[in-house]
Image (cartoon, rainbow, N blue to C red; front, side, top):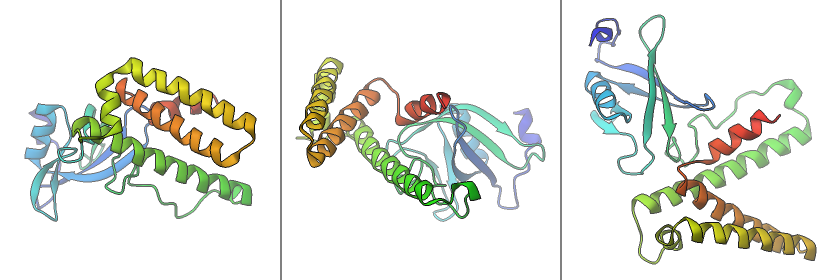
Length: 217
């Protein structure tokens, strides 16, 4: 391929690859590629990398189901870094977080109020919990487990999932009317779980929902 002649692989035959969500441009991870990994990525349409610690090629998502479907491959002005725009299935990070860059060193001074700090912590906790749950749901779809309620829903199909979403939404309303905080939190968690299954059924993720919310701000 012509652009190979331009790329500047290092002395170990590697080039860094920045991975970015093609929808909202969130940076997901940094990995390394050799020529074989890049070939495989282009050939299969899914991200392949070279593990420096294991010294072997690896297919992202092969064991976890968290595949990265390639939307675009770019390279920078110095021709020494690749940018992959991907459709991330599940979590990019091995910790279960959507992005590997989930820790903050410094925030803008305008976000240092106590209210902002609490909101930021809550957002992180909710985001992490949803990401981990969604990861498990995708794993159940790829690797069915006997006795799994998630697999039961997948087997029954979309209509069953939609019925459960409606039921759980009604139970949230009842819990709120009853004024029982613990019951409302439980029913809301049930609703979010079933919405996650619905999103997975329709090949969407919470990233799609987050993008829509940001567009409304």
